[in-house]
Structures are given as structure tokens and as C-alpha cells.
Length: 283
Ligand SMILES: Nc1ncnc2c1ncn2[C@@H]1O[C@H](COP(=O)(O)OP(=O)(O)OP(=O)(O)O)[C@@H](O)[C@H]1O
Image (cartoon, rainbow, N blue to C red; front, side, top):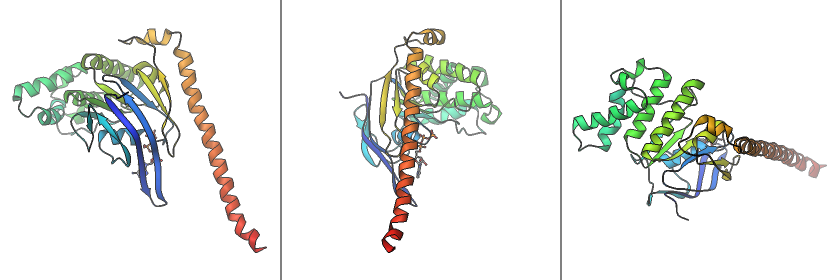
């Protein structure tokens, strides 16, 4: 079935000093419009590679990505991206930082209209009273709020989040998770988010996509979340399936660990044997 977002036979090969390294291979994923997917997998498996290819910031080696019927070719304002650290212009105010993107997307809007859009999203993320504060004077959590407001203000078709709360303390993290979900309910943006946090994935997403360990990483398992929206944290935690799902996800990650250890041991053994063989021939 065709999706609003389709990643088909997606692959990435990086050139390395040791030759080409196939990091992602045959990665297939369809997303419905407005769906929220979390991508989970071990460190280094290729999650950011999938996300940056979707953002158009990383060339695709194989397959392709179609968003709303258009195959992506490079970055575009139809995708809003939020990384772990928001990369703001430190000398500009919160408002000016958001306006940078808004001015590009609404070039024909009046100055007042563009300012209203930027101010609206900054207010939604709780920065209504800091519009004119320089980014350099904002805390890390406040800067990340600006990053989120900047991404939403573009009215993107798709939101790409690479561990957006990874550097925040747990209270700010929980507050921003809830703010993000509130805006998403309002704007219904299709969202792909990378996280290392199983509980965050359970709380935020409609589906959790588990990636296999690299190299040649692909979709390993997909979990559907049974929780109602809007999400209420206490209800999600109390849901009878919460701990089963959590356990299954952790089990998947542990199985991947075991497979990797086994593959590493086999590769080491094969290397040892290859080193021994020429000597045995000479004996
Ligand atoms: N430009 C590059 N050139 C060569 N190898 C790369 C490049 N970028 C990433 N890699 C390798 O590709 C693999 C996947 O990296 P990626 O950052 O996508 O993983 P990840 O799952 O997002 O990791 P993490 O969870 O630690 O952020 C890693 O082995 C990494 O070293």
C-alpha cells in the first residue's frame, strides 16, 4: 500500500579508507499522513543516516524516498529538521532565528504576517515572553524550543527529529515531549524521530520501528502503539500492554547485541584462520 511517505529499498554506502561500507540496505518503510514513527536501534546502526537521507542532507545510494507523491532530491522546506542541538544564530533573537526560515517559506506574506507566524510558534513552545532575547542568552532547553518552533513555523509536510531531547534534563525533556505532541495534534505533521529511549518511543509514537544492527541495517521489527491520543503520560504508563511492549523492544535490542557478538567472534575466527593458512601451505 502506498504511503504519504515511502522509503523504498533505501540504501547507503559510505566510501571509507577500507573501501565502500554498506551501512543501510533494503530499508523499506511507509508512513501514513500525520503518523508519528520513532526509529530505535543500537548506536551506529544507521538511524541518523536514514534521517539525513530523508532530510536531503545526505545523498541516497540506492532506492529512494517519496513524500506526498514527490521523490526527494536534496533538502527543502517541506521537511523541518531538529537535531540534538538546535544550531541557532547566537547573535539573533529567538524571533529573528525563527523568522529566518519563515521569510523563505512565506516570501509574499507581509512583515507583520511573518512575524505573527514566528511569534505564534514561539508562544506555543512557551517562549512568548522571550521573543526578543538573543539566542546566546537562552538556556539549552529554551534554545531547543526555538529549534522546534523554527521547524513547525515552516509548516513542513514532514518533521525529522534526531534525538531532539537528548541533551536536556529529564523534567525539560518531559515538558517538551508534551508540548511537541500538543502541536502535532494541532498541525498533524508526519513525524520521524530518532531516540535511544524506549519509554520516549512508547509515549510519543504511533509505531516504533526497530532497526537491525549494521552493517546492512534495515527494518527489523515494527511495534504498533495501542495508546489513545491525546496521550496522557499516566494513562500510557498504566496501559496493560505498556510493559509487555517495553519488554519486547528491549528483547529485540538484546537479540541484536547477541547476533553482533556472534558475528564479531566469527569474523575474528575467520581472520585468524586466513592468517594461518599460508603458513600451513608452506610447512
Ligand atoms: N560520512 C560518513 N562516512 C563514513 N562512515 C559514516 C559516515 N557517516 C556515518 N558513518 C558510519 O555509518 C554508521 C551509521 O552511522 P549513523 O550516525 O547513521 O548511526 P546512528 O544509528 O544514528 O548512531 P547513533 O545512535 O550513535 O547516533 C556508523 O558506523 C558510522 O561510523
